[in-house]
Length: 365
Image: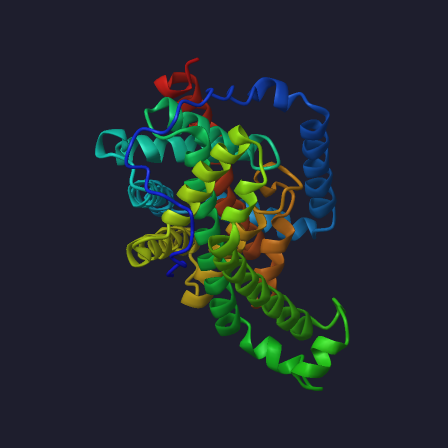
């Protein structure tokens, strides 16, 4: 991805101007806030409603399958899932280096991976992606750039993740549910897109979802190019201090995309690690899953975490179960695969993240 040369972004080849260090998000206060409590209540209600709607026999079958899962394969799935964190740490270091940050200010990959892990922990206990703001604060404390510049690289990373996530989701979704789409488009694709949303027409709904996802990717790319071309005009209309912070943020955001090939490759590799973890979860339960479904499911699990309704998308597991049921997996196996994978992609973040948060030197005020 090449950006116009007219952008006002400048490499951070010197230490950024002094910036008042933002106060870290008060996690205890955020956990007790009305918004957090409401999101937790919503999560419990969604889980309760979903479990009550399930056949008790399917729930018993799922629990028996989880208890009988192969422990070695489960641990391999856990380890494979956590391989994504050093990969993401290396990618973040490349993004920071692309901004022109001096080598002495570049944190180690292990430190960046730990910061990312802590931010995922925060995102798993409070809504609205507070963990991303927490990342910027921890990066500055670790000797990195100013908070505004650090947030520029984080936003760039999120945009990159979204591009890869949606693209791979659409590709693997078409490969996984192609027959469902074909069966549901008797009147043709154009008639489906004109007819509005009808959830009972599964094939048509999938096509509409994939078209919407493609439009979002296109809009993101066009918006980024427009921001690179004309974003500097916004800085001219701001007061001096906000303009300075905006330039730090926008400069880091745009310059992060230099050397697009390696960061794109690392992005794909991180998602592959998460997909491989779900493949191993299936094997631990004695199930051999088709590769497109493996990739699609792991991407879908990541996609629902973007929805800011509940921390860590708790309560939205019914979407994952439905994706497996559509492919012919009965209620028991679908529930077992979803439940076991969520112990890795959510529960382990809570348990491990709490331990790291309590004992890491990075979180000590």
